Length: 224
Image (cartoon, rainbow, N blue to C red; front, side, top):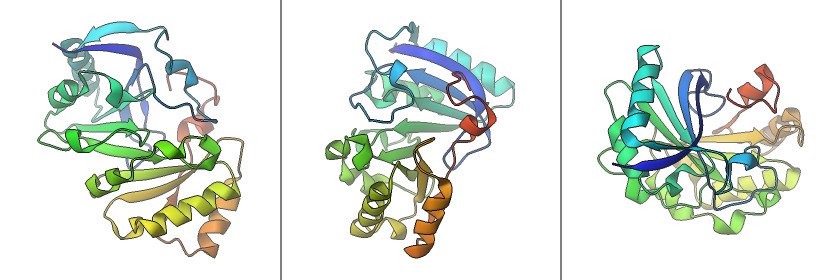
């Protein structure tokens, strides 16, 4: 039976990604191997972050309760959820009919081991210069992505936009079936600047993505 360090769980809307605006159960785990300069969940990244120890079956029970309330999306997030030792077991246990299991991952963990029989949806970050973490990106993950998945470029500056465009071109991401998102760091860059850049570079295959939960609620509010 798998064991996990759970920082919090709650039902809200997906704030970003392909299922943005849809209800989801969020399971947030502690611990991350990166330290992005603009991270908005740094409180969950340390090993000593307050948490509860839970088993696979306990998390399945939480999921079943959410499903009974009409939820059809389960988002595993963090921190970095793929660092949980027994995460593959949990992914398999949550693979239930009519349920979409999504992994929000930071781009530094290999996805191929999780792309088998119980494959979840992957929402994969590519860390840009402002994060200070680009050197940890595993570009081989791009080869795993399919039409249900997406690559998210979190941008804080014009330099980030330029680098994102380079990565898209170098790896021909606009020719892959996955979706591509530019997501502004809240309060660091104006969405209009991103739109202007998309128009200038003719990035018709990229979508601007705003973090809905930070628009609806206080940007510092947890559990939403």
